[in-house]
Image 1 (cartoon, one colour):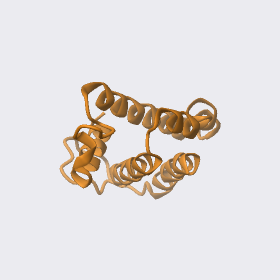
Image 2 (cartoon, one colour; image 1 turned 180 degrees about the vertical axis):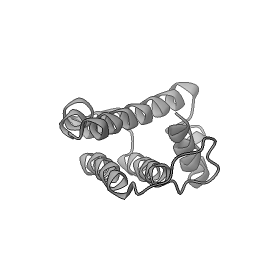
Image 3 (cartoon, one colour; image 1 turned 45 degrees about the vertical axis):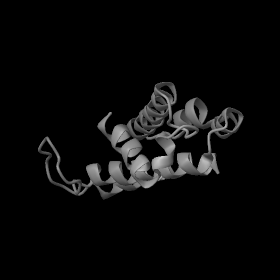
Image 4 (cartoon, helix red, strand yellow; image 1 turned 120 degrees about the vertical axis):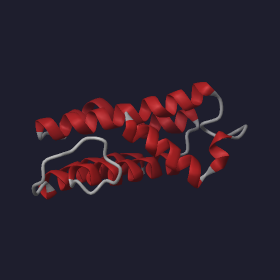
Amino acid sequence: SCVVSDVVSGMICENPGLITPGGNCYTNRRMAACLRDGEIIIRYVSYALLSGDPSVLEDRCLNGLKETYIALGVPTNSNARAVDIMKASVVALINNTATLRKMPTPSGDCSALAAEAGSYFDRVNSALS
């Protein structure tokens, strides 16, 4: 998704060492894994949001996520930062405050939906810490 690719781009801008030899996004395989993991997280946050039930996020995505990343040598601080950027991006999209939108959206108060989405991203970060 555009959100995930923007998140990874933002992380690389903040930490260019990620794409240098030894960095966690160095080599196409690692970059692809990073993008895939971001897509999985945003997909399960979306499922939880649509169902109004965080158990799908907990059971299918977060259960064992931290341990998997530790076993793979993926630093949790990078993951947490990616989730923070993803949360900010999604909340801005829901609240219709994101800049450079390509599609018009109806106006209205979506603050409750944005808060719910934000809480699911907070659950992801809690699972990673």
